[in-house]
Length: 260
Ligand SMILES: [Zn+2]
Image 1: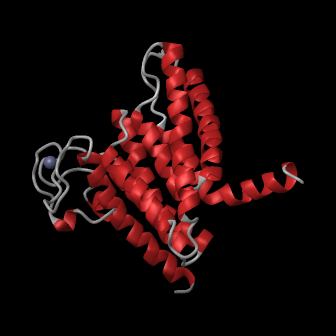
Image 2: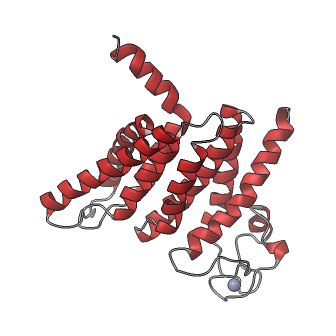
C-alpha cells in the first residue's frame, strides 16, 4: 500500500473502529452488554438504523439529531470516531505498515476508550485493563516486540510505582487518593511499552496534569480539590506521547546524560 490511498483507507478503518469505541464508552460503565445488539438512541431508545450509523457522515446528515425523537446527539460520537481515524493515519505515517503500527493502533483505541470513561465516571474498567495486560505481554513475543522480560518488568514497574504512590497518598490524605484502576492501567502500559516508557509516561502525565490543572484554576474560581481528579486521561495522553516520542526522548536522554 503506497501513497495517499493507504492513509484514506486506514483513516476509514479508524472511523469504523471509533464507532465501536463509542459503544464501549457508553456501555461498559453502564454495565450494558456490548454483544451484537444494535445501538439505540439514549433518549427514545429507538434502535438506530444501519444507514443512520455511518461514522461521522450520519451525524452530519442528521444535523446531530436523532431521526426519531430529534433529541440532540452528543458531538462526542463523531469526535471519538474522527480522533481514532486521525490517530490511525498518524501512526501509519510514523511507523509505516508494520507490526508496531498495528499494536499501537490497538493500544491507542484502548486509551481513547479509557480516556472518555474515566473522564465521565472516574473509573478505569478492569474489563479493559486486565485483557490489555494479557495482550501487552502477548505482543511482546511477536517479531520486533519488546520481549517478554521487558514486558514483565514494565508491568511490574508501571503497577508498582503507582501502587507505592497510592499507598503514600492514602497515608498523606487519610483517604483513597488513587484508584486501583490507575494502577492496573499503568501496569498495562508497562506491559505494552516497557519500563523506560512507563517512567516517561509518569513524567509526561504529571506535566500535562499540572498544566491542565493550572488552566482550570485560572478560569474557574470554584474549583474544589475535594473531587477525585481522574488520573487516567493524563496517563492516556502521556502514553500517546510515549508511543510517538518515547524512543527519541529516551535515546536523547541516554546519549546526553548517561555517558559512560
Ligand atoms: Zn431518539
